[in-house]
Image (cartoon, rainbow, N blue to C red; front, top):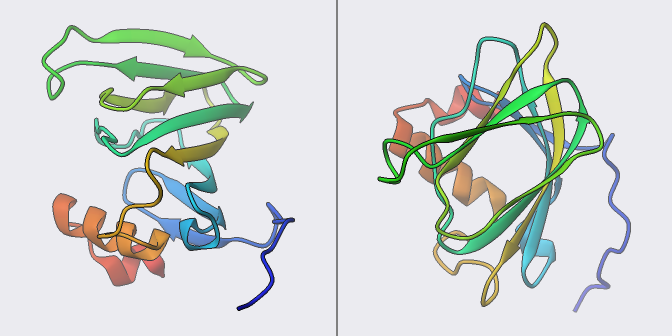
Amino acid sequence: MSQPRYVFSTTETTRYRFPTHTNSLVMDRSESEASEVFVGVVEPGYMPPLHVHHEAEQIFYILSGQGQIQIGGEEGGSPAQHLSVKPGDVVRFPRHTWHRIQSAGQEPVVYLSVDCFVGGRPADKPTWDSHVRALCQLNGWDYEQVRG
């Protein structure tokens, strides 16, 4: 059995460029019992699809840029709330909460995301890459282009 890693660099990442945003993987879920970490970047004029995590609570720490968080909305059935976020803010998305983030200014919004899986990492998506493949299939994105 290999030794666990304790330190993960935010400058030595694996980049995934989706059509709507970029995620740079810092710590893969396969290296943890119940969490993963990535740095997200959303350029002005773009935003990820409204989505939900049933198996994980998600935490964003806003590093730079002004952002707008949407909670609820079309997919979730509840009225949408829009909240402004700025560097230094921490945002918590409980499980089962529809959400997305977008830049609210002329510069990208950059955030550190920590996903905390309830009951351990998902057996059907044991790695970040397996999760990305499922996301690409769901949204009609080309995995090879995303992984670049």
